Length: 503
Image 1 (cartoon, helix red, strand yellow):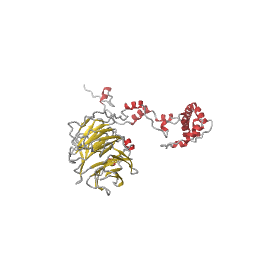
Image 2 (cartoon, helix red, strand yellow):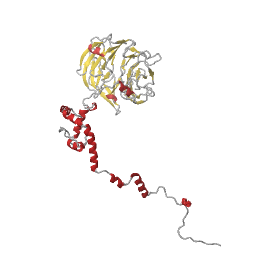
Image 3 (tube, helix red, strand yellow):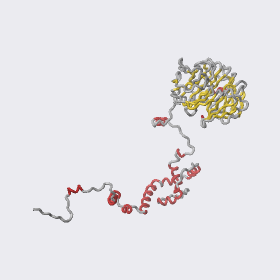
Image 4 (cartoon, helix red, strand yellow):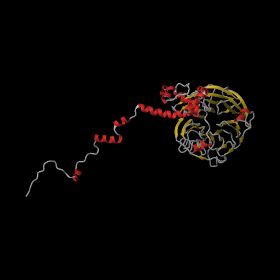
C-alpha cells in the first residue's frame, strides 16, 4: 500500500550535510568583523580618549620630577657659581664661534620663567637673562670648555696606540712607504709605450708622464705628438697629431696637465695643444728669441725658463707666453733648473761655474764652481730640494748638497759618478728623491741609476740582454711605479719599478 506524505515548512537537515553548503568567500570584506578585531587589539577609541591625563596631572608630574632631581644636584652648584663672578666675566670675553643653528624657543624662556616652572629659587639674582645662558655658564663652571669647542685648538699627534687601532680598523691609516733598498732594484721590462705607432722618431726627443692621469706623451723629430694610455699591457694610443715641417725638440705638460707646449730648435714659434678643447694654437715667440730647443717649466707651472743662443735665459709666463725678464751669463747657457720652492733658478753651460738667480729680483745672487767640469750639458734638482746633479761633457755626474751650492764658492760634491764614459745628456730624479737616473745618447745602453742616499749604483740594470740603444729622454711616473726611456731609434721603452705603486 503506497502512501504519499506531504511535509509542509522548511526541511531540517542534519549536521553531516552542512559541509555541502555554499562556502563564503575568504576575501570578502566584512566591516562588522573588522570593527570587532580592532576593538580586541587596540581597544575602544572612547576608552583611549577617556584615559588621557589632564593638563593639571601633567604639570604636577613634571614639577615633581624636576624638583626631585634639580633640588638635590644643583643647589650646591648654584651657590658655587654665584661665588665666582670673575670666571663668568672672563668667559664672556672669550670669542665665540658662529652659531650654526638656533632654536627659536630658547628666546622665550628667561631664567625667572624656567625656575618658576621648576619651583626653584636662587639665593640671589643672576646676570644672565635667558635660561640657555645660565645653563651654559653653569656647564663651563662644572665641566669646563671641552677641547672640541676650543677656538684656537691645535690637532695633537696620535700616540702609537692610536696607530695600532687604525691599522686594524679597515686600513684607515695611510700606508707608510718603505725606503728603497740599495744594491739591486726590482725592475721589469714591459711593452713599449709607442708599440702601436713607432712613427714619432727616429729621435724621440720628449717623453713625459701626465701629473694626474695614467697618460704619457711621446714626441720626436718627425713632428708627431702622440698620447698613450699607460697600463703596462696594451698602452693604447689615444691621440696623434702631426706638425708638418716642425721637428719637435721638446714637449712638456703645462697648467696641471691640461696643455702641451711643443718647441723646436729650428723655428721662432711654438705650438700649444689644449687637451680639453682638442685645439692646437701656433704662438710666435717674443722678439729676440729664435728657438725653443731647451726650456724648463717651474714646479708651480707659472714660469718658463728658456735657454738662448748665447748666455741669455728668457723668462716667459706659461699662460700667455710673454717675456717678463732676461738673465745673462758670461758663457753660453745649456741647462736650467728651478728649485722646488719656485724662488731660485740654477743655470749652467760652457765653463765651470753654476749661476744662482733670484726669480723675484731677476739678479744673480751667487756663483759656484762645478768640481772638475769644463762644460755642463744637463742639471737636475731633486723634488725634496736636497740634491743637485750636474752632468758634464766628460761623462762625469757630480751630486751636490744644494745648500752648499747656494752658500759656498767651491762646494765639494757628495759623490762623483764615473760609470758613464760619454757626454751626459739626461738626468732625472724620481718623485721620492730615492733614484737618480743618468743617460748618454752617445753610446748604446749608456744608462745607470743611483740609489739615494747611499750613493750606490744599481748593479742589475741594465743587463747584457738589455737593448735600449742610445737613450735620450727619461721620466718617472708620479708615484715612481713606471720608468720611461726613449732612444734615437723610434722607440720609447717602459719599465715597471715593483717597489712603488701602480703609477
